[in-house]
Image 1: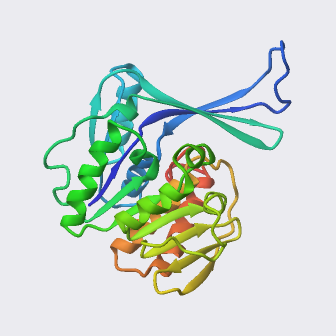
Image 2: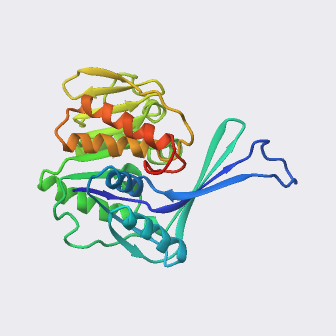
Length: 285
């Protein structure tokens, strides 16, 4: 079973075809879906026939209840506490750009988990943002330490621009060197923010995976470099695309694939997500 731990929020995408004008009312199209990388990876894993457990926290409100129900309906073992107010991520699309506003709400305040949370777990996925601030970070570090003792492979993701500015590229690289994950998965833009060479892996990680617009690069700890072309995709919505990649990659690795071969499965799942609205692989494109 895959264990993921992190955010579960409501994600709203607001499209402004004509942009925003000060003092004016703008017509818009709004889509509401489930958000949070850890939750999305767990949900997509179960959609594709895998087993996943998600650990997190939402608010004691109707939105939080709806998000938990959504995960469980997809087959996720949702270990979700309720307290406070459910967070939200708002994507504003205008003039070809996406601006994301994030209020993590209750997600960032998880301060305890069940003792048996690692029971049956053979993989652990942690978005690095879950390691940046307490109380959530303290809980996640505890789970990671136990996972390391049990030799459960850990996969991390990179940081956004704001997170790199706040946490620091050097601190992130030191974190990876300390945790020694099985893989760190980046978008090309997030990898570049660390001021690494495009073909440079992150020291301490067995594999560094960099998702590019046309191909994905895999750098292994022994210095080997590989590139896999992305599958042709009709893009309807990019929300959750990277989460689909992570889910596909981890499922393939769990089945015994090499990091390079796992990228092909990851591309296929990511394509399924981008052909639909929201972080899902089910339903009509």
